[in-house]
Amino acid sequence: MRIKDILKGYFDEPDEGADDDQIKHIFVKVPESLLQSDCLALESYWKPSSYKDYMMRIDPEDPNIPQQRHVHIARKKHTSSKSKQVSWNADGSRHDRGSFDEKSVTNTVRDIARKALKLDATITLESFSADDHPCVFEESVVSIVDESALVKVSIV
Image (cartoon, rainbow, N blue to C red; front, side, top):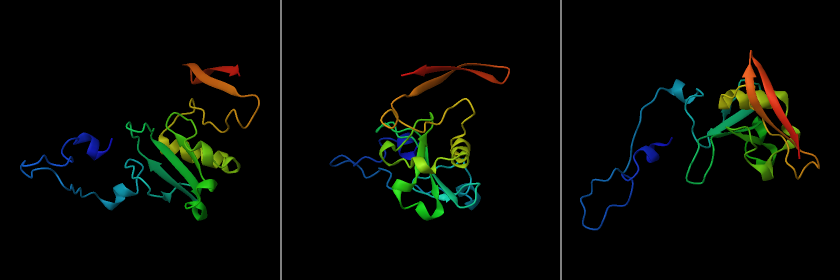
């Protein structure tokens, strides 16, 4: 959640003739190490992943759009090139469907996404859409028993 959502109403323009008691700025001092950790999500902040030459950017959810928390992943040289990135939402669905670089999807990239979004193995990361393939499999985890997942697969 964003600070502006928590303090909703305090950032509004003051009414005509009202006291000027609206909050204009909030400064929060945090240790530099916190900026490098996965527990703080900053928009448009590319940082190195745990894999050499791979960068990631975690963006927070925004219920007003609506937008889920999601991660963008790219090679270091491609952070400015949207067509060379992949991104997934917190539920495993593709985030940027129009600019998802299918050729960049590897086990390494999937591992970066899972760690960044703190997803477990029961969440399937979507890698293609119905437009890309004539036969699409929909799968969902039905139950988990003794560290095994019962998965329902439907052919659409």
